[in-house]
Figure 1 (cartoon, helix red, strand yellow):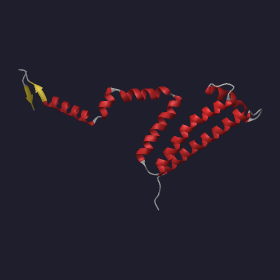
Figure 2 (figure 1 turned 90 degrees about the vertical axis):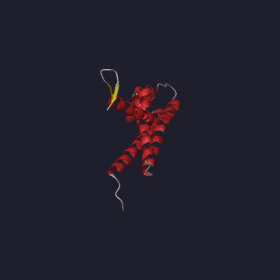
Figure 3 (figure 1 turned 180 degrees about the horizontal axis):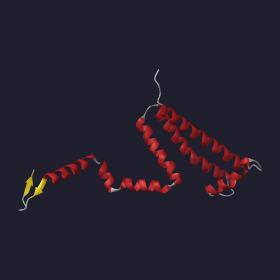
Figure 4 (figure 1 turned 30 degrees about the vertical axis):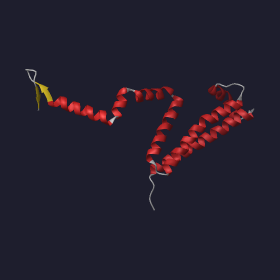
Amino acid sequence: MTKKLTTVHYIKGLLLFRFIMIIVMLIIVYIVLMKHPEKGFLTGFADPILERVNIKDNPENTFAYIIGQYSISMMIILLEYIFLVKKKKIGFWIVFGIDFVVTLGQHAPWVSIIIFILAISKETRLYFKQQKVAETINNMADSELTAKDEDGEINNF
């Protein structure tokens, strides 16, 4: 019997918690928008939800919009869980990175734009090209080993 890492248990628990919270939130949104409770705890949620999605007097489209928005998060969470259970580290970290960018993009869209700009910049592309990095290192080494004397002749050390 092998002992599983505690971190894996925490990650599974957090993924399950996020999944359950999305389901609970969708149920609350459905009750608020479709059933229109007159009194109770959920009566104050209708106006903020409608203001958040900027749709008035059309609860069916609002609910579909919210389901569509969170279905992407649910699919990403399921992919993370599947890769975690199947012990596919690279797949898990790729999907985790996508999840991070998608989640952060909902709250701060400019972060995704900055990441995109950094990814397409010339320096970043050159940094990840192994041949260019090797050439740069060789050029730096050659320039350090080569020096000109007072007459302008090149001396190699």
